[in-house]
Length: 112
Image (cartoon, rainbow, N blue to C red; front, side, top):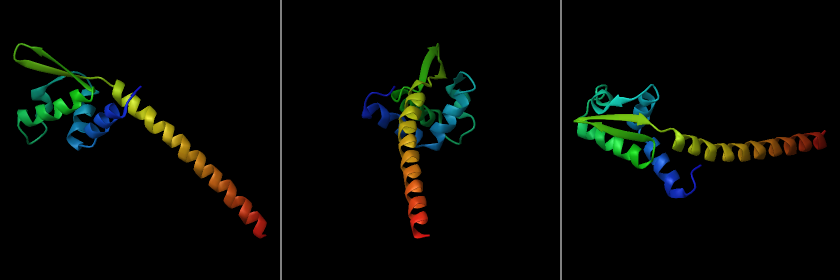
């Protein structure tokens, strides 16, 4: 689980960009080269590499080199950690809404 806010900041910062989210979606299907990841976009390989570095710093992508070819793979651990963090707050807000509903129902009954 993400243990500090810096790690969480890196994950959410990486997820803030649609290209990086697309790259993660592609990598969820399996390992890909940088060239394969760059192909669907109208951007250079260095631009894709910058996106990959952001994802690597957040711990969501692992890159290995085989000669001149870089292969990238998904590491979903930080995504699971971010989802667990969001889940805690979802449970909190659902509880708040449940309490509000009960309060409003009581108020409505008192008015009748």
